Image 1 (cartoon, rainbow, N blue to C red):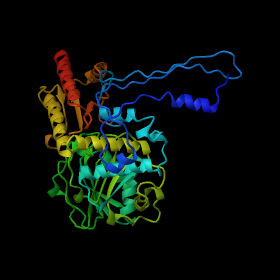
Image 2 (image 1 turned 180 degrees about the vertical axis):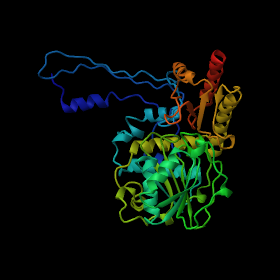
Image 3 (image 1 turned 60 degrees about the vertical axis):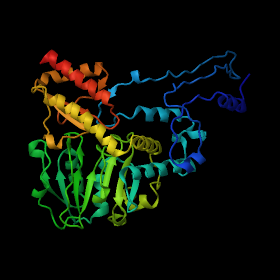
Image 4 (image 1 turned 180 degrees about the horizontal axis):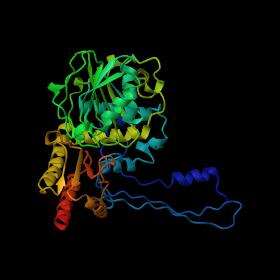
Length: 437
């Protein structure tokens, strides 16, 4: 007998996926609107489905197709040292998994929600609130959740801040700073006031030696160069108080406390430290909004996005939701002061292993500006690098091959990389050296 639509619906409703839920979100209004059952995070996630024979009216036979999802455990996961998209906190992934089909009793996945519905509005508003708490962002700044990656901001920034004839200054400490400068050429009059290219991007300049243009609209830096592993430990001050400091913080965003008030604009792709690919976060001082060049595409106009609370068009909803879960997790860890301590410890262990290897491993970056997030290193015997990467992958440590433009190896040890991952990598490096040294 054929199953009616009503019966099909009944079947689906009566075979709900058993799901696991964790700590409640902090917003009282959020909880009141979307309550859910609490389960301790260590509870094993399981799924149960009842088998049922369904026959079509045109067919005489019946088939039984049970569906089972094997439980995932920590032992199934690798240590992922990719530069981005990168590893995410396992507890955040489990939380997202638990609510994947039915978010907080709404009857929908976040992926299915209207971006203008009350459910998603609560998600994006809480994500912004938690980010403001993490970075102590004042009301003088707008927080925008956009798309297009940090690369799109290479054009959006001069389009919004400058006229075509305005001067702007760039400090180029790596490939991403260089790309940002080249894009700005199309929309302003940029000047590279310092470049580390001749020294293969291994240093950051002394700020006192910089010759800035006093008429520059902004001074642009890349706070952490993902490819070359160079990180600003402090930040330059623009020569003119009317010149704003702009920073691409894609690969060290939310890895440490930052005084947002020193910047006019901070922007970051989410896919390295705070979420999956697809979300770009822009923190911009509100008085800088509303002066875009006439030719600025609507999707690059900060005024449009600020006036519409990042909802001018459909945003990357699920990515924003995941960022929100990461922000909450960072707060639960004690905020960015505590997060930075963990990152410093991980980086120190790895750099110490490199520096104590008697030259078997080498990091080319000047010690005072080595990145806490991206650690490039080479072998004294380059012919062993492919074997190093392959053997490490066999030990469940993946994505250690260096960027194609640099070579060697690179270990990206973002917030979500656990200490155990770095310790395992260091132990492997010592074993590899003992075998091949």
